[in-house]
Every structure is written in C-alpha cells, then in structure tokens.
Amino acid sequence: MSKPSQSPKGLRQFLDIEQQAAWLEGRVEPADAEERHDSIEQRIKYAPRFGKLLRRPQASGLFEILELYGRTCIPMPRATERAYWSVSCLPSTSDKPLVRVNASWMELFTLYADGDDLRARFIVHLSDLTPGGVLVPEAVDEALFEACVREPENVSVSSPEGPDISIVRIRGMASIGDFLTAARAVRIIRRFNLTHMNRGRNAYQASHSYSVADYMLGEGTR
Image (cartoon, rainbow, N blue to C red; front, side, top):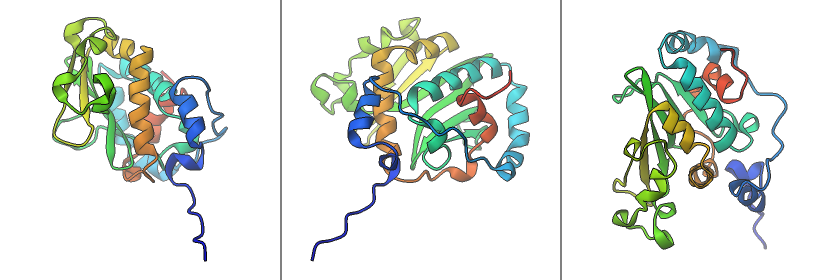
C-alpha cells in the first residue's frame, strides 16, 4: 500500500522549488497576497517598544533599510508574514539590537545602533562565500564583500562553528544600503532566507512587531 504524499511545508506551500529558484536568481517576482493577516492585540502588545524605536536617532535610516530588505530579501512577504518570517522590535537580548528578522529557529538579519548610525549582521551560508562552495572559513572570498559596500573597512566576515554558517557584519547606513542593492550579495542573502523559510513555521511569531513590519512592507508613515 503506497504511503500518502506529504503536504509541502514552509515556503513550498506558496512557491515550488522551480519558482523559488527563479526568485533567487531575480528572474521573477511572485505575486504576493493583497491583504495581510494583522493582529490588533499583537500591535498593542509591542506599541511601547515601537514608540521607543521611533525616538531613536537612527529610526529614519533604519526604516529605509528595512523596507529595502523586505522588498529585496523576503519572498511574498505579505503572504508569509509572521508565520514564516517575523521582525522583533528592541528584542530583550544581551546584544541589544534595534530590530531582528527571524525565520524558523534562525536569525536572518539584525540592525544595531552604532552611535547615531547603524551596523548590521547578516547570517548566510559559508558555501556561498567560497570557491566551489567548500566549507573552509579560510577560503572566504573577502573581496566579494568589499566590492559590495561603500568602504572595504566597513565589512567583516566570520564563520563560527556550525554547519554552513557565516556572519557578515557591515557598519554604516550607506554601506548596508549598498550591500542590499548588490546583485551577488542579494542572491547570497536570499539563498539563506529560502533555506530557513522552507524549514517550517516561524518559532518567533509571538515577538512579531506589526508596526515595524509596516515599514518592511512599504506601508509605514515617516
């Protein structure tokens, strides 16, 4: 007796592998949901934190970067909001981020204050940074990243112990914006995000800030 086929999980409920590959390469922009699933209770819960974020000197630049990230690096962001990705506002962790984007159990992207400026942390696949995809941190092509930012000294790469993981750190709003508009960098970010959005439902739904997500989706008011 044949086993029943399993229903697709994660992002595969919205886009099959071929459609994901086309988005990864920038060949198509999948049609998104017209409306979002909102939660007034969730908005109210995180309204005080959002109010604090609005008063930060980095707020305007931060929202511009978040909108660029949401438009560029998350497939079908309205349809997948909260259930398959989320953004936290001033999360209570020891590194004191301003915002953090997660999918499944994984951090994807974090913004921090750097004086009145910003610094960013992107988590990506080590195999996307090395010739032939070898999992050797010493083989990382640092010139790749230096070409994607305003000043080479604004970017650094480290590879902590773990399967196929690297951390890209960038200082300065201008360099973060450059990175998010560099085609090769965007592909690297997208591939990591696809990996974790395909792993199943987001574990951080309870900390999702709809008010911050408004800006990621181009619906915020500055």
